[in-house]
Image (cartoon, rainbow, N blue to C red; front, side, top):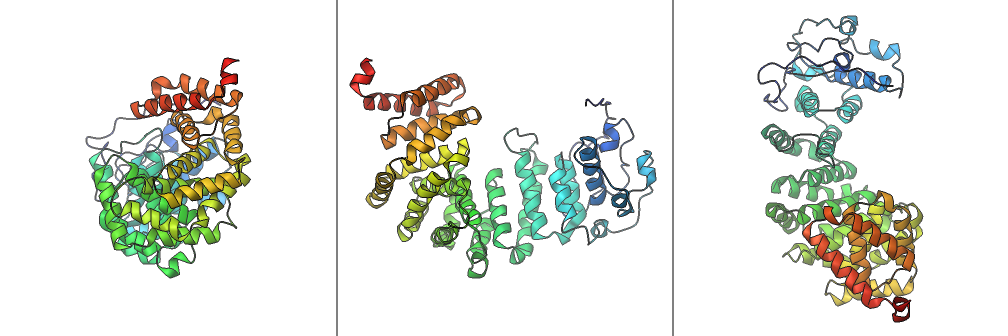
Length: 442
């Protein structure tokens, strides 16, 4: 079903940029709701923006797509949205305070749904501003997760603007107020979102990591929570910003056993939650931190693996058992992590990886078979990483598998960066040395 879109009215001067104080309330500048998409009027620029109205706007959009129908009881549950809005007429602004614009019974659940349904940074900004100082840990995590998604693969939001940076700074300043009420899952989501945003705040990172490692909080952590904490720290270290690595180093200095307790907790919960993306996230995180070569960071990762040596075997066995449902990115991260740890230069870790591969000789071929099956969804860098991993592990793939990988990396050659191209060429040369002479002659 195609929709006819009408050119929306031009915003007022300065309306395209959110300059309102964050978390202290703001009035709507420019917000194109479902009514404007149908050619109706835009919400009043003089009316305080309410999170329930945003939620209903998102629900109307979902209804227009045929996902679900809006029951009249839902409309009656929000007195701010009267029939005048349906006919494009502006309501008179009320004298309520900003904190009361979001009813208390809607804030915990429906405001989080409204944040997830936002399409622009302005919408997210206004919802958080309407909630104000009553922001809960779940709402903070949802706001950060939506901001990280806006910065994601397609970078649909202008995350380099001063307003976006001010928005993140305000959320970081609000973290000490909500951190005592954060459970392990929420704290893990906050760290993961900040790593995706490449946001660096040393004090925030140390406080959040220390809170997660408290016994009362850690005892409720799942394997996913522990894996994503390690992965988030590795993403910050693996970035191009040296201040991020310095922030991680400071956080590990403040909580030196953070990685060890996360890995130990992960090892205990792995039996109950054996999803491949958790295993690949932990393996990639440990390999990245251990291979960073930075003081405090690399020794902390090595210490975590030494104190829980069985976790590497558990992850490898788990990856083999769940290979049939693993994604291409999970398999690429797993193979890259195994190859990096095997080539880490630490005899104890190398011995564990080699022993695991000898005990399960079919693990790498099974992962490679799954990767070739879902090769169409693999990123260019993932194909390069798989070739590099096979060469480092000295595993020669079967001829049909190798041909698939070569065709895929050849098609992506112009899109790879210089490092990935060099790694790919080295891998192909190393695999050629492993190719049997009789097969090469044939």
